[in-house]
Amino acid sequence: DDASREIFNKLKLESAELSTKFSNNVLDSTKSFKLTITDSNDIIGLPESAKGLYLQNAIRNGYPDATIDKGPWIITLDMPSYLPAMQHLKNRKLREELYRAAITKASTGETDNSKIIQRIIQIKTEVAKLLGYKCYAELSLSSKMAPNVDSVLQLIDMLYEKSYPIAKQELEELKAFAKDNGFTEELSLWDVPYWSERMREKLYSYEEEALRPYFALPNVLDGLFSLANRLFDISIENANGEAQVWNQDVQYFKIKDNTSGDYIASFYLDPYSRPADKRGGAWMDTCLGKSKVLNTKPVAYLTCNGSPPVGEQPSLMTFREVETLFHEFGHGLQHMLTTVEHADAAGINNVEWDAVELPSQFMENWCFDKKTLYSFAKHYQTNEPLPQELFEKIKNAKNFQAGLGMMRQLFFGAMDIELYSEQYDAFSDKTPFELQQELAKKYTVIPPLPEDRFLCSFGHIFAGGYSAGYYSYKWAEVMSADAFGAFEEGGLENEEKVREIGKRFRDTVLSLGGGKSPSEVFKLFRNRDPSPDALLRHSGLTK
Image (cartoon, rainbow, N blue to C red; front, side, top):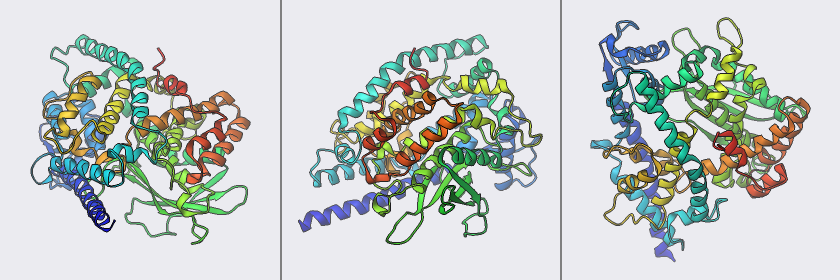
């Protein structure tokens, strides 16, 4: 009726406004924090690339005479700045200060999101009830592959049972390692990244930083594009200057189908972090969708927050940043290689949310494929290929602390689904933070601090479309690992098979968009339903 419709529209409008406010608060809160270091003893342990970034931050923030050796240096909370500090800073007090700032981001003063998240959950609950659902999770799942909340919790529980014992064991190993290396305190949350990095360096004896010179962005793009050529029979050409861009960092590319010779799509790539005016994270967005009626070809935005070039050096990426680029490119491919001609079902449109991560996570697997990696892993100055032993170590390190990593994702997924399910009453006195602390007892091996307000910056579920959908990453990972399993079964060295299976992947997963259900599309590609075996194997959780 008209009255309900009016309430519904008001709620939707309020929800959209609050989500925007939520994101702006996170951005402003991130921007307002600056840790200025003036004593060179306090930056002991930092790699040169991090010092260079912190120096650049200082010069931009009113210290034009700052130098790399004498400082000052400024550390911020955006990931390319925060993470190296947490992994490398010897000064434990500074790590604690950074950690506490990160977990309380957007939770005080003018940028406080506490009441906003409570209200967002309330609105989503009201909207769901107006549409005849018991809770927002039920509404959210009505358009996803997962049939109900129980099936989501079953997946989380299955992965929990495999991962929790391994995560506990990994934490004990980390404590023992830290102790053997002279650490006498209780291992705290701000010690975990630091000692994990030392342990990873010891076990696999390479430093993340030592890889950067082999991953210059221009080379990585060449390798990524030649992989797309091999698998999907497309050519990608730089078309800078053919389209207007919003920042000088942005590049523009066109995609040509090799068989027909036609241009079929194009995309913008915005690769670097710009904390002043760009939110953190990485995403693919649609600029134009494919439509027969409007006679449009797909255009995508691929946005990353990678390490920017420093001085004359090109952008030298971490391995994780390389994976992120491959990931976002996977999303882009599903948007750009669609053959569906009706806009509403073309590309990623109408693809169930828990299946939308399939192509992106699938692409990440290729970063560990030798032929693919060596097509771009060469030193940006000497052109020397990445040493073979470093490649072996990257592969072996892939599952370092896999249990802890899995538990972190399961914690986020459980927290999200419970906040939007009938289990949590957003109109009661119980705050989302209390639910977070309750779930932490089950899902974390080191409990969060009582003042942890991580939820205040958990953009995915309050401003990013993943409300009651964060589990989708794991749901899709089951399918993406299984999809890559098809190439492993065919033989990654067998070029003919790789091209044949690649063509089948393009003709099914990348082409059919939202025109068919993802279960049906997956079956067309794999000739069966998805199995979790490949994910458990790839994650090293089959012990």
